[in-house]
Image (cartoon, rainbow, N blue to C red; front, side, top):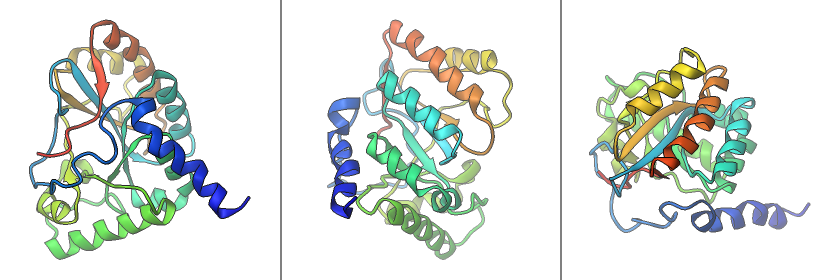
Amino acid sequence: MAPARRLSQFLVPLLLAGATLGGTPAHADRGTPPTPVIVDSTARGGRTVAFTFDDGPDPQNTPRLLKLLRREHIRAVFCLWGDHVRQYPELVRRIVAEGHILCNHSMHHDDMSTWTPAAIRADLLETRAAIREAVPWARIPYFRAPNGAWGQTPAVAASLGMQPLGWRLAIGDWAPPGTDVLVDRLMTGITEGAVVLMHDGGGDRTQTIEAVAAVTPRLRAGGWHLTVPARRG
């Protein structure tokens, strides 16, 4: 297959993502510089919630999650671990092609809380280069510090054009407690305008995917709108 044709297969779905999956268009807020203020909410507030997934891409979990998100018409943020991006670039291309938003989650998932700005900048640039090698045209509007160990990362990320992305609810799926427990944590822990932290990498995330599948119709039945995080702090 010709390179131009391969490119169009991914580029066209990306351009149409705002219409097919809803949420904020990919071009929104391009003229507004990022701030060091950590975003943990949606732009609209009210009965809205944003799903974010860390530590991928993963060859087992990410395709299953993407299938679910497509079926449920959910647009999510994927916080990508640079080492995994280099291992599975085709999954990064699929994430973008299906209309989701990318987030720089560092190269090696290190604790960056004591790093100098120069060291942080080097890591974030390396991660960005790895993502751009997989998907040259993709935007990376967010940065999330591994384990929430922010240190001086918010200011550095903002200087590189990425808004620091936090969360209001982390469901603790890194140590899977059972699908029913995760469902309960989501249904009782989600508040209006919340950004929710979950994982599609770092282990078997079957329970996370099952929990998202279970809570999505319940949320919508309760008048909740699944959207994306605010673009600026």
